[in-house]
Image (cartoon, rainbow, N blue to C red; front, side):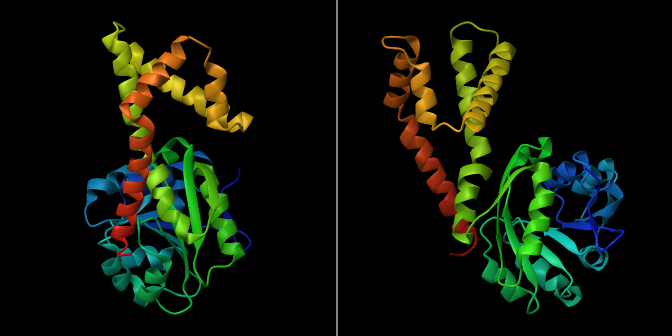
Length: 277
């Protein structure tokens, strides 16, 4: 797909204030999918520690947050939640009605963002996850009071270069953080445990981890492509008196289901705490 353009032939220039792993993952997704040329991305951070990753992609970099706003109309704020208010106060003098500002900071509400920015600023929130870097991310977006359908469509079209993106009510954004943002770590913990079970039974470690990862990938594709409820696919794998039902019994004894639900609840609650809710 051709690189994104705005207003005729002018290329869309996208900025990132904050250059951590999530910002890099989103930028890399844009570039890999051909949505943006690397030279049309400008990232800022206080030091070169993270900016070097953007430079390796061919993006432009700066230590000035205001410079990002002065050169880009679509800007992602990818700072730590506690830092974001200070950053917004810094850039507010150069924010115009032409800007579309997107926060990926966990827990910071749209109302808070709008309070910290000039009146009528077009603001959206996005919860993303690390698989954006391989264009298999899961993202949820919500729009502020002044962001319309055209802004939402532009953002969604861009983010779909990084995976699946759905517009949701803002109340679901923090839940998405707990489910999918933090969920990547939960799935990795399960994949590690799955492989270690095989290692315990005598399989070489490298082989066990490769098979565990492929098992997760294949299962996810089946769930997506068939549109089945996970319980149906689980039932399809189980046979009376077979290996799977014995293994599932062991998982239930270990409290896997309750522990996983509690993990999502705890991560969601923490996202809300970070936003001061």
